[in-house]
Image 1 (cartoon, helix red, strand yellow):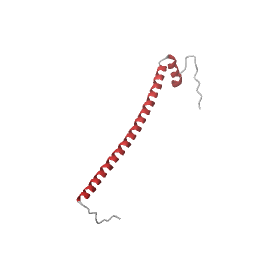
Image 2: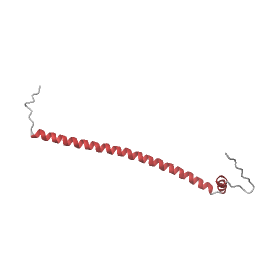
Image 3: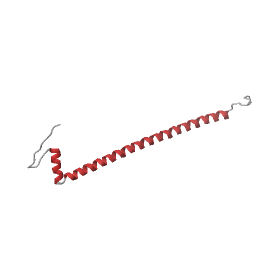
Image 4: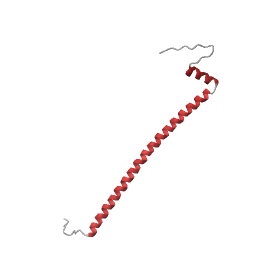
Length: 100
């Protein structure tokens, strides 16, 4: 059995306890900073993925719009546009509308 009579608190032990507390606090703060940094990296990675997905969608929409514009530059494209959007017909045609 250890006798507590032989253990006397000295200034050296007190100093070591203070150093241990300060070191523990520093390790705790470093750990918090690392965790916060990792969480921020995950958040930024998710944001980058969302932005890339949005960019890809915008590129697809732009491609579809460009394809549509190129088809409307031809005479058949203009004729199709006039028929579909403006409900126009040729001189020898009759437009018949069927209601829903």
